[in-house]
Amino acid sequence: MATALTNGSNYASASSVTVSGSDVYVSGREYNGAKAVAKLWKNGVATALTDGSNYAYASYVTVSGSDVYVAGFERNGTKNVAKLWKNGVVTALTNGSNDAYAGSVTVSGTDVYVAGYENNVAKLWKNGVATALTNGSNDAYANCVTVSGSDVYIAGYENNGTKYVAKLWKNGVATALTDGSNNASAFSVTISGTDVYVVGYENNGKYVAKLWKNGVATALTNGSNYAYPYSIFVR
Image (tube, rainbow, N blue to C red; front, side, top):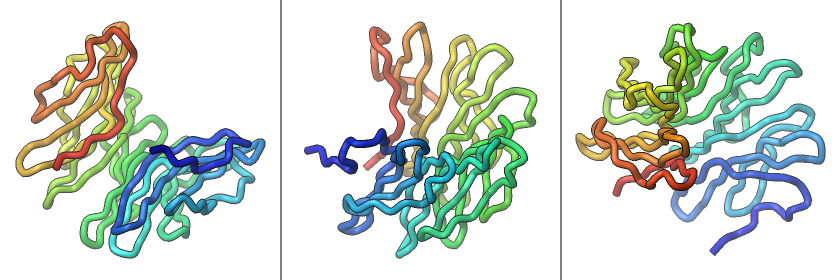
């Protein structure tokens, strides 16, 4: 059964959900009439992460212990600044000289990992320190980060000059999930035992939802309609 998080008076969207104990957290945005305000809903109660003076978006939420982490961005007037909120307190991951975006956050032990991009370079921030996953010669984006043991997995895409190639990075080393003949992107990655699961899409004229298990693709839709999955969970 659906629960409305907003009253419909302003445009709003939810981007991510996680559950911790009996609490349900949702990240997203709600317009204040002119600008989008980054928001976090806990059990349906909204908290504004930004003051509404700049366009902002909360793209992902995760919980570790008693700490709530939200990744997203806030515009500084001319550029989008990648940002991380911990319990509502914001840290800028970029300085605003280039467009940037934080798309995902995960926590492993005392380490906080954020995936996104800056100036069209796919990036990973570990405890606020950035590592470039691509060299900037082509557009690239890191959509999702997950950690399994000592391994860090990132799903995203990189342009090959003409098409977007769905990619998976493991400890910074990229594997192409598609051959580059069609536009494609990987949105989410999760690990179960020794198996690596990635979801995304490949465009064959229409977006086809796809699942890659250990690099082997399965089409989830037949291509008659547009489809793309944003997230995967293995139990």
